[in-house]
Length: 185
Image 1: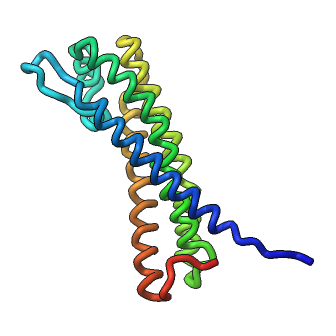
Image 2: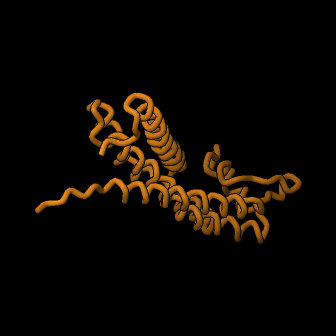
Image 3: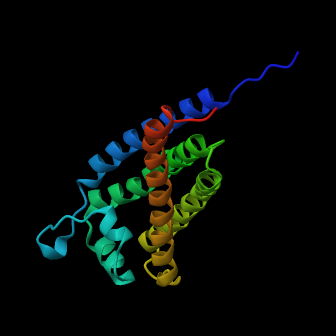
């Protein structure tokens, strides 16, 4: 006798675990991020987002160089916390893309959702490489890798994760309105 066990309850549980990891680490990163300061400008605070979307390599190096002792420690801690954050931030949209589009009656939606789900690990990899760049600039200001590649990876990461999240959230709403349920399992 063959039983047909659906994997969707487990996927939904994993999705909520990813959301929890994201919220928990985002809160920790916000608390740690409050201590960043740049002494060049009368202690003007800076954020990881400013470093992430830095216009030049020199902007990052100046921020690192001028950060005080506690801020330097917190910058390193922020980079470490980001790896935990990535586990939730990229795989929650991947799971939601998969769950909302798998077996969807509209084939194009199914294919698009599965493709976006499969691209989330690429966004994760881009973020890992971005963190390697930021860490290398932190420990070795002479690190000489192409800054244009860094900027490309940041934009690619944000494009992929935003597309996946917006597609999945939009599809949850569409499926609920059109079919009366969010998932097809």
